[in-house]
Amino acid sequence: MAGGGAADEGFGAVAEEFRRNFTERGELGAAVTVHVGGRKVVDLWGGTADARTGRAWEADTAVPVMSCAKGMLAVSAHLLAQQGVWDLDAPIAAYWPEFGRHGKERITARMMLTHTAGIPLAERKLTFDQIMAWTPMIEALEEQPPLWEPGTAYEYHAHALGFVLGEVVRRLTGLKPGAYFRRAIGDDLGLRTWIGVPQEELPTLARLVEAEGRPTLPPSDSLIMRALTLHGAVPFPGLDDPHGYNAPDVLTREFPGAGAVSSARGLAALFAAVATGVEGGPRLLGEETVTDAVRPLSGGPTFSGLPDLGARYGSGFLLDSPFRRLLGPRSFATSGAGGQFAFGDDEFGVGFGYVTNRLGASGDVRAERLIEAVRACVGAPAVA
Image 1 (cartoon, rainbow, N blue to C red):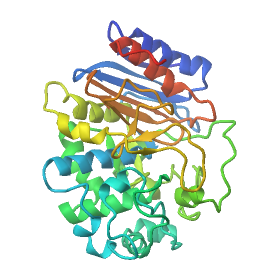
Image 2 (image 1 turned 90 degrees about the horizontal axis):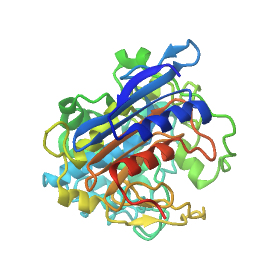
Image 3 (image 1 turned 180 degrees about the vertical axis):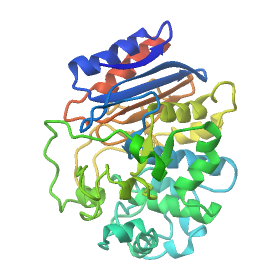
Image 4 (image 1 turned 90 degrees about the vertical axis):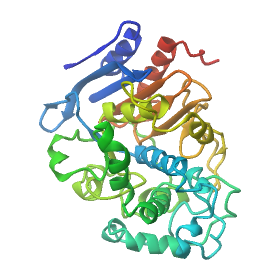
C-alpha cells in the first residue's frame, strides 16, 4: 500500500486498521481523517485512485460519496434553522406554496429529514435530463400525493429528500443547495466537498469500482429501487453507465440527495466544524442545535415491508445504532453507498471522514473497524 500521512501518538490503532483494510479487506484506494478537539490527529491515504491508469491516491483526492450529500444538506438546513430563517417544524408549504397540495399540506422539513414524509419518490417518470434540469423534478414532487399519512411511517427518501429540501433552500437563499453549501460553509472552511463538483476537478477524482460479491438487489419495480434509481433514470449501482455515479453529467450537476463528491479531509473537517469548530474557529452549529438534530425520531421496519436493519435517524443524520455503532448519543453521521462515511460527536469532540473507491459488498467492515479504533482512542464506552 503506497500512500502517506500520519497519526498522532495515541491514535496508532486507527492507522493499524487503515493498513489492515488494504492487507485484509480488499481496499483499492482510500483515505481517513480524524479531528479531535478541532485539531487533526489522523490524516492517512493510500492505494490507487484510478484502477484503469494506476494513478495513486493523494492527500486531497476526492471521490463520489453519493448520499453523504444528505448530511451536507442536513447541516445546511440546521444552519438556516439556527439563524432563524427556517422553522423545520413548519409546513414546507409556508416556504413553497405549490408543494402544499394533494395531501402534502402538513409535511414539514423535519418529516423529510427523518424519511417519514410519505414521498420517498415522485411517481411521475422523468428522463435523466429532466431530473438534472431541476424544475421538472420539482414540479413532479408538487404533484405527488403522499404514499402514507405523513409522519406515521418510515421509508428511505433516497432522492426526494434532496430535491424537496433543496428547493426550500433555493427559495430561502436564492441558491440551489450545492451552491448554498459552498457559500455558507464549504468555501470558508476550504473543503474539497461539493454537491456539483467543478468541471476542472474531474480529472483529479478517484474512480469508483464495484466490489466482488455485492448482494442481489431488490426487484427493479420495488419501492426502494424505484426510489433509488428514479424509475431507472439513474442506474444503481451502474457506476460506469453514462448516467452512473462516475459520470460527469451526474457529478457536476446539482443532484442534491446523492451527488456529493468529497475528500476524507473535507468530510472530517465539516463534521468537526459542527462538533467543535476547526483549529480554534467557532462551532458551525451550537449545542442546542445539535441536541435538536440528534433526537431519535425514525427507523425500524419500512413502509414497504423491508425488515428493521437497525438504522435510527435524527433530523437528517444517522445516529448511533445497531446499524452503525458510533461514540454515543451525541454522535451524528452520514453515509454513502458502498462504504463512504462521516460523523461528528460534540461530547468527544470528534470529526471523522472515510472515503473509498472500491464499494463494499455484504459484510463490509472497513469503516466500522476504523470507528472502533477511534472509539478506543478517545475513551468512548465500548459497545456491549
